[in-house]
Image (tube, rainbow, N blue to C red; front, side, top):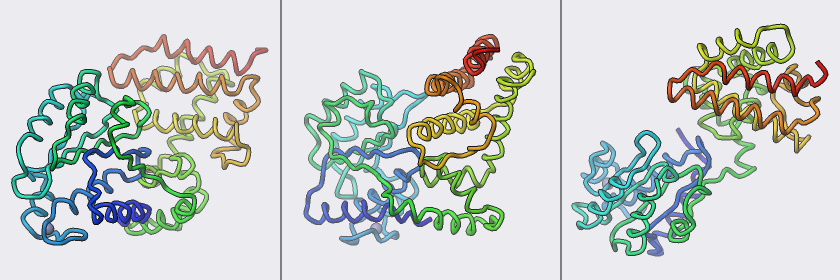
Length: 333
Ligand SMILES: [Zn+2]
């Protein structure tokens, strides 16, 4: 895949490296699905190769080991059960104490760095206070605001952004990608692409996933279901049961995104709104406290996700949340 919107960041990085402005700690941030992993893969491949001063050769021992994920000078940290633990950061300290084996740098990556617990964050601060001379640490996050200011201030920021010009090119890019995946583009018309882009907030990889897996149909199914509870004589407990049995974490993510775009459309009438004519959209928009209702819906989805992760199927809680939203949507009934 050619992630064209990464080029500007790669050029910026290349220039800094050529000027020998090699940072010791970099915070790579940007929204989910924007291509942070791809950007980092490219940056590390270029750093680790000794054969060429720009880019990487792809064939030397450094390149091959790195591609296989076995390079001794590259260390990856990822959260376990949503926590980056202190022992992982201590391993990182050990990793940085030795000199590079076969490349010029020791490179470490902390994925989902915002998931560090307090002990881990404090251990990391110690590394950042005395960074190893030939080490480069990358902190990757899509929730930069959740990291401690003392950590952020010790890192160079690399914020992955997709400019408004690049957003305009995304529709074409999506079509080309779908084509290369042998998906009949004619069946995915412009409107669908527009809806998927809005729903994903222009995150290219999420947009592709929505279209590839026909997730817009699934979303409509869930919106229909919610509308039935709120407005028709469908029993709340029946629907709650169906939701708990049939839902999965992808559905909840999609519903969460739907609420977010609804909220944005509420504040900005010029914003493209998906399912604008769906009765649920109409119902919510007519409600006396629109924002309040949308937040309630978001809380409900949050609860569903929590349930999903812990396998606790709390039907009564879900029912009471549905009833509460229903009464606020239909205050006079
Ligand atoms: Zn190489």
